[in-house]
Image (cartoon, rainbow, N blue to C red; front, side, top):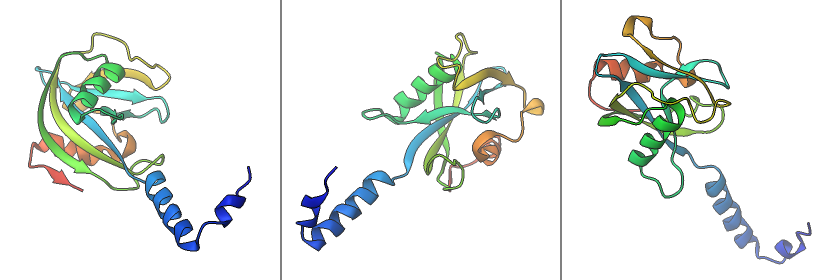
Amino acid sequence: MDFAPLALLPKGALVIMKEILRHLLRRPVVGIAAAARTEDGRWLFIRRSDTGTWAFAGGTLEWGETLRSTLLRELEEEAGVTEVQIGKIVGVYSRPDRDPRFHGVTVLVDCVVSPPTKAPANPLEIREVRLFSPPDFPRPLALAMDDMLEAALAGGPAVLE
């Protein structure tokens, strides 16, 4: 590929283009996760294939989606859950070191869900879905989600990290 035409641009234009590209390519990714439990108090976790560890179901927004529609889609795709009562926001987490793939900003939402009725849509991504009682929670959770779980269990005010 010939980049000679770029050399014809004024230096200031190249600086601006570089800055635009930096912002376009290095933006945090917005996601949502469900601190989901059933009516009988069991909590929903998924086992991730990439790490083999357990996590809250959730994922990143796709273009044109709302947080609500993303949460409902991810719960169905990852955990086979189709009945969801969305509650309050537990917290917003933005620590850059949580996910080695990218800098994510995750909104954690309290939910009451029905037990899963379907298998995960992508078994290459999700190995297993299970409901756990609090004494049997799998630890540590994937992507440093243990503090998110503690905040959800405490039922306290929203956290901003």
